[in-house]
Image (cartoon, rainbow, N blue to C red; front, side, top):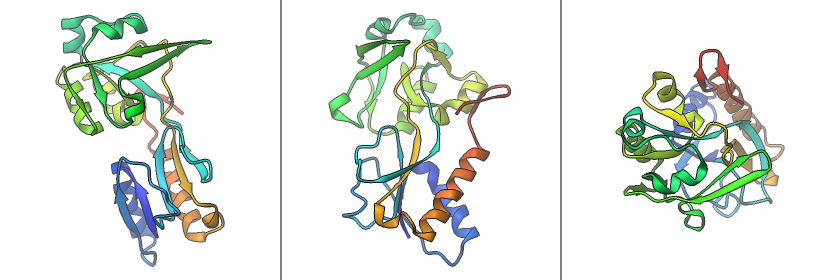
Length: 209
């Protein structure tokens, strides 16, 4: 069963293979959108908005995006209190979507603020960006699943918590021809169970979905 996934699913694929040793799994990791049908993938794992409406999507878990920075950065540069303040801060920007590069949208109620941010560091690798934020280089927008343990430990702090960012919900997507496939169904149900068992907790007793 060919599958396209992120680094997180690497470990889950290993566990799935141990549980279903009779099933063959081929894993490909990439940040670029893939046409599952054209490239003969059975299922993909994607975060955020789904670009291809021809695919069947099953949400595996809710996943908020948050703005955060290290205590060192906030002590040195101060904490932004309004979205427009971000334009005057060093922001770590992910170059994963050129059309939206450096554009952050923050929503509060019915109002949405669109801010063009910039900074001295940018990358197309989320783990690299996270490492820079931990070292105090600037403000980062990142999914809660990736931030939870650092927020709990205090190595990162959430800023502008009264605002919502575009969600990064986690989906399993697959072509319509696989909608009744037993192997795809088994894999998706396995992922849902695993993500439910490991929901991110950012405060004591507070699991977000």
